[in-house]
Image (cartoon, rainbow, N blue to C red):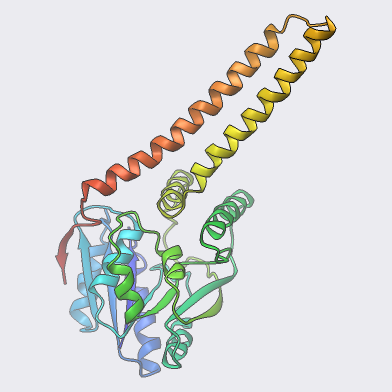
Length: 302
């Protein structure tokens, strides 16, 4: 049996469509399945519609968070509650083409343990968003040693891979990267991102920036290495200015350097404050992990 985890946040317009479309595709291919919708603290009728779908179809189940905990938490909650021999993750808005689930399942039957959905095209995105996404994945790829330039949450994992992921104790987990990092026998399925058929994207620029920062700091120490690089740059600048000042002093042509001193002080102060901010962000993440609060709280199951 395949479990299909479907995170949902304010997706009342897509619940019925997702349930009907995915169920029809899997039933047509005679693939035993369960659909596991995870309501991530939605403010609309998302949970009500999930309950209605579960009442009509015994293969549909639902989890409801007590509040919004984020997509990563919704994915891991679905993975933990899934009962299938393999588990897939797909977006509720069906921008991940559900017909690819069949191709993924057939590859799993052939012995592959992780089947990754790889974006062939990203659909309609602004130039700024594409540039930001490219930078984000370049950092993650460098940290993992795995090419994640076209990675997505659209995946199918064998039960052993799911068990490894849900047993990881870290709270700020990045599913997209961790599912590649754990290894196992992997295959890839290319897909084109589909247009959202209903509703609007829940990702604002602020949320995307916050999402990127959280996942970068939870998975890699790359920003801390940036602090070291900035320190080296400042050392080189200091040596060059020091040698220049010394030579001018020896030659007797030294001039008043008030402007240079002010610029240097401002530059140095900025580097120090940025470095302290990066270190402080990591300390905050360590603090969150040490507190040991649960990744999510379930209010109801259906």
